[in-house]
Image (cartoon, rainbow over all chains, first blue to last red):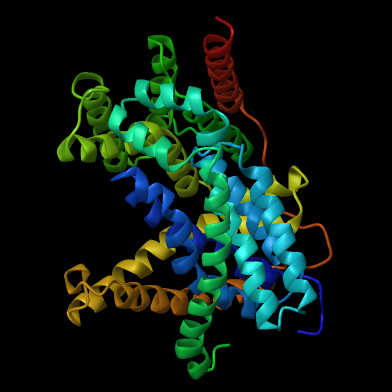
Length: 196
Length: 234
């Protein structure tokens, strides 16, 4: 891969991995309807599980723009599936910064890849934005929308202006940990098979 | 019955409108009415395309959720069963319209049409190609996942095993393998068709807005405006 510009093949790879990440996100998201605390634990679940495809993705493209395009796609999908646009700037910013960090390491050094994955995982917090920014309206709309008061109280105990900092930090930390997990899995399965 | 064939750009606008409407919670009866009408249109369009089974399935699912939400669940309901019901109805009532819409668009838009529409709207290649792949890929992932699931069941690796990490690993890794292979084929096919060539691509499909397109655009724009007005200006 001498050429640093993204080619059609890379766009297709980006599309595939975006779809995979979204499937992971969606599977975890479904759990959130069981109990609000699970909604808060997305920050642990998604980085850990999502890291497996992500780490493979890092080894597959290795060109600037891969994460930025992915984050734009995620923002579009989030909007289409009804998550709103409040989080879109955060998602795209996280993607861009993660891309820059990974570029610094030439997409080869594991240290910068791990850091970049940590930053990239911050997009998950974008899902909480409507909860925090419009807390009062959101609560009312949830109640009107048929959620029980119990669910709402627990949701807002877990996610509010104070805990968002912790959630963001957790996202980053588990993103970095996830990078190690994902790296191990990729090494175990893909490097032996000669795919990477 | 005449088949209604919509322009991909109209479909994109419809997706945009539905996502917008779904995002804002409906409270007053009028808002619910708008929402239900907006949900029924893609269901009707699905039936029009001859996909009666899926149209009916969506209709039943959505109807059941709405009825439950309306008559059974309130802010006072607690307990496990109602929590699960809230979950189900919450998902369905909240996201179903967008899902039906997305399902309709994915299953009725040919990829060539989509690309041509994207080109007409001057979306950069990077975004449109990746987006097209994402769109195409959800059904593929589901198919692959189901066959992997079968294989794993035969080996006795299922939810009952209790080893969650193994379960995730044994499903995600094969899924990634097959997705990568499919991706290779896909890019070979795309390159043969001249995707990525430094010229303007032509398309056999001539995209033009027809009466049905304008009708849909007007209906969805009107419902968006209605929604905003009843939400914020009263």
